[in-house]
Image: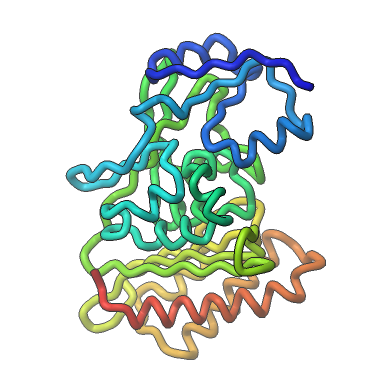
Length: 289
């Protein structure tokens, strides 16, 4: 059985001091849905464990002037129930609703989904698609904001410093007319890790031309990234079956060129094409908010 020192502060200042003094020898516990199994299997052996669940500053969804802040320890269930997120970011609500089962959604947190940076993350691709910023805090440097896309190094690794805590996720409120969609394919209907998922946000001009688009697949790449080449094909053009099919072909081309051919590619490539086309047409048919 492992032996480590457990600390559960009520205030952010105390948590930052604790991790600053211990850095790499300390692991942070939020929902614990990834960390606790790793501890049980002894895949990690920290000397210190910092529980941040009692820090009130890290909880909840705040509706700010032109953006929304989601506290790092906000659970997936709390995201689903948030009136603010349902109004501004249904993409994130749908992604959160697809995570595991009720027990996992009640414990798992948005901050943990980001920090773990697993290829099968459901909510993280949505944050990338919405150009989310991470609010990071440390005792030494205070608060800094960084784009979520800039900290995702490779699978299960980020560039967040060992003396920093992720305290919140900040997302600009969508421009009028923005529409979004999410779809996930798992091995079964519940408690499933994603075989693949897809997050799309877009906006059209009054004449139907696509004026903004963000496309982020999940579980098919080492990390969640925007499909810039596919987005460029769609920008400034009106959607047609031929254009959407060409974009679907380009999407799988980029994925295969980046991730390589794997044992699952024969299955995932045609499925990803079909999910992309389905989500795109569904989003295009929606009334803008």
